[in-house]
Amino acid sequence: MATYTLNAAHLYGDLMNTYGDIGNILAMGYYAKAVDAEIKTELISLDDPFDPDKYDFVLFGGGQDYEQTIVSKDLQTKKAALTSYIENDGPFLAICGGFQMLGHYYIGAQGEKIPGIGALDHYTLSQDHNRFIGNITIKNAETGQTYYGFENHNGTTFLGKGERPLGTVEQGNGNNGQDKSEGVIYKNTFGSYFHGPILARNEALAKRILKLALQRKYPDADFSALDQLTEDLTKNVTIKP
Image (cartoon, rainbow, N blue to C red; front, side, top):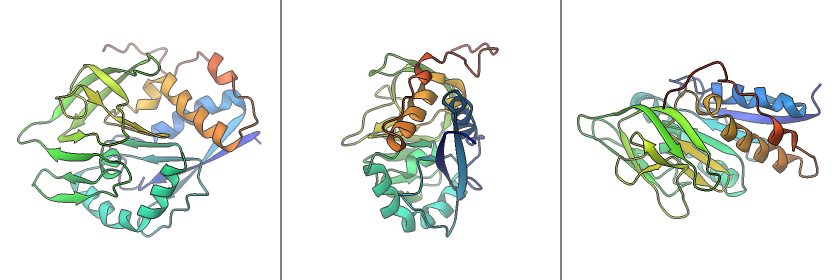
């Protein structure tokens, strides 16, 4: 048995996993082995309660408008619990549709307004006859790290109070194609439009989120081995920005 255990909730993983977003948890689990830790994952879907005190990491992936409409209704029943988790510094990764639905609302391709939970202060509009598709490169202002990914979204997201971008766009479009922002950071919540999945392609970010989760649960333990870990899941893959 591993010395450390993290309990992860995969929100609506049966509905919001269009681009294999479960790969983000698999990537974290891969790096967790370096500090003798394991990640146990539980699917939280329609009609399932969310206990903010039970989980050490939450993943909320992306989906299509149809799935988002279904999820939006159920998500309101989890609003208070998810907001509590976020406000208490729970590590959270939200991708694409999941990122959008943590905000106030998302305007679908047909003009319908799909409510989010307003846990974060952003909102998402829709583009007319256009999508942001292609490789994207961003730089995180706090760490200087460069992250690579692939974006494919119709929505244009605008950040609000207390939010800062995950990175500044160097290539690609990002949140809205206007202000050079991509993704979001609020407390220990990270959001992004990156598919790939983002943590499989970006070792530094995977270790950053993993370390946040481990230190939050085990504040007296030493996880410095993660800082020395240089193995990369993509070391045999050539990534062209």
